[in-house]
Image 1 (cartoon, rainbow, N blue to C red):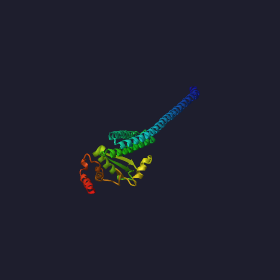
Image 2 (spheres, one colour):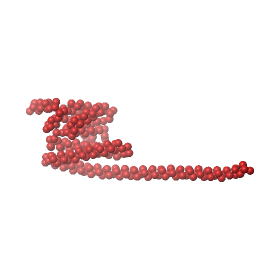
Image 3 (spheres, rainbow, N blue to C red):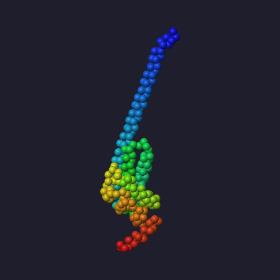
Length: 259
């Protein structure tokens, strides 16, 4: 009788067990759905913020472009007036802008969460800041006759340009030696997002990498430290530079023979 009684209770136990399992499955399904919806909502919020960021960046770029046009007009006016104090002050402001853009680019480059589109915008901003700085440097040196030389350095991928790493090492060394008296602007020759780079490549007929342009004079392929010094030292006439000592007699000889 006891065995028969236990058998009669088994269906109830089985039903309760099945009901419990069913509740577990429903709860798990609802939990999964909730997590999924939360992920979708979070993605929409992040995407919305990213779109707002890009829209704000576009507005900022328009303002920067308008500001740049006004600055060029102002610099041209200062050049005509030969107002060097104001011109140099404007130039120093561009140095601050360039450094700020460089730091932001480095910060975003180290941030794994930044999207590729946002990084490209910052990369382009830095390139424009470099070229703006380069143009102001040319104006300042020509009008105010300051001791300064500028180098445009066109580089490419390691596969296309095996000498670029060594060229960058030489330029970095010279930059440390001359500090603010030597301005070096590194431009990726394969960067297609900024039309200004294509204009410069056309202007200087850039065909090989590395190529450096020192005050409009082009040097193709790897350029040694001495060859660079021989060219840039002619622009340091007011204050003699230690690294330029071997080349000053050469300039004097050239100048005297041409008179």
